[in-house]
Image (cartoon, rainbow, N blue to C red; front, side, top):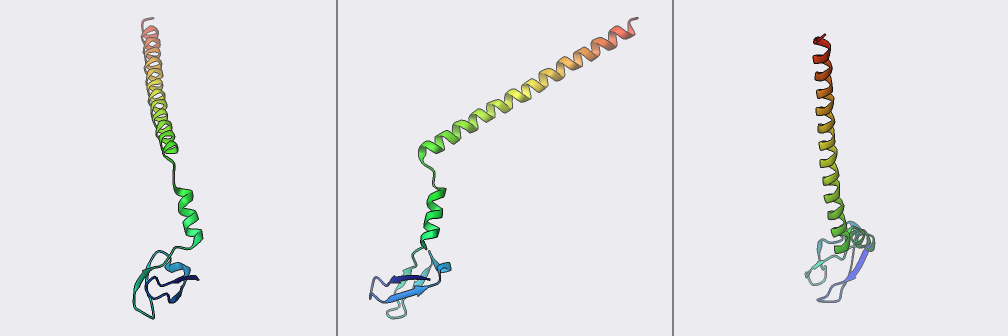
Length: 97
């Protein structure tokens, strides 16, 4: 349960943790109040936050991975061309006999 006080009348409210972050009316004065999130939800949200340095590092890594992928594709293409040329050379030499 989440226990908090109404900011208007000071009445005590107690709501289930599943209502954290939603609104609830005060039973005494009718004021609509936002229910505070339970501490576990706040800690989980903080764990998901990235610093700007971490975001830049992730972008740099993603850029490096993109270049590595391009080099791998280019290498595979070059190897394919070389193997194809060797096969054609072998066919032409074999049929020329």
